[in-house]
Length: 377
Image (cartoon, rainbow, N blue to C red):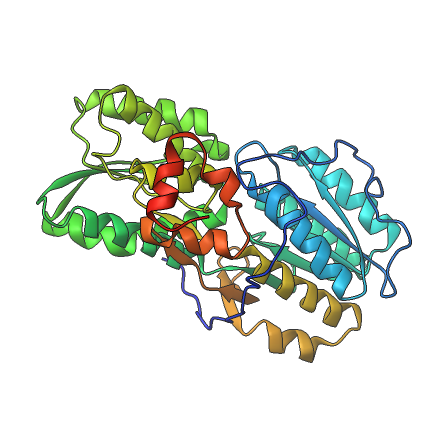
């Protein structure tokens, strides 16, 4: 397991936040342009431009629904113009967007690459050009970024695993399947480390039984569902719980369980507190999700960018008080590691009250009565 200093920087999410994009269960779609200036806001900002490249929209709605508008608002509040692009899962496009930002001489480059090797290559170019880089949400292992802003992702895995362990505590030897995220995503590795920290001792003691732990390339929900169905068939349906790394993978698992009349009977974890995930929790098909208040992530990124644009590393270091160890180049990356929150059926209201998902997106159809039951409006 990676050694890290978990000095967490707590920040307060704004309960009155009004999203300018649609909710987490909707993809607003990123710009299809490969020009890094395609979506630059008119007028610019007093402190110059920050270039931001997000990874994709296919496997998680969060990037366009949450990160993009929140980063836009946070960076503009710090006096920047924010040019936020999405690479749509295309590594070549990610690199092309980065080259465009570097050639423009942006004040700071913020990247969340799907492939850490791509991120590391971009960071080397930016360093040569004298442009500071912030790794956003996921680190580029082996890279040279000065700072990293994310959540305590090992803690995410611990919360998911402990929730599963608690749900199965009265069923000795219960059979557990782990559907993990992409093996190329260091965050997925950290989620898995958190799972192992809680679950390995239970497997070793016989309290639980590991059926299979399977990473899913590209976080692809379709692949996740097919993979789980193959495992389910192989063991004759003898599955008592599924640790799914995010809400989209959880939904794929639940689809298989539903086909076999087991939805709501086999607990399933998730992550990201999407509208669909919250609906699944209210229905009883999903045990939990993990809420990561992305506004905190965006705000801290913008504050770091403001410090770095001025060359004020002391101010940046005062913000990034944690570290993440990068084993590829054996260095500790200065980090902001925010605290994730466990969400079960009694906590769904919290996510909605803070404005990350609208009640109108969750409380539809068969879920409307559940919203009334739990005081969600």
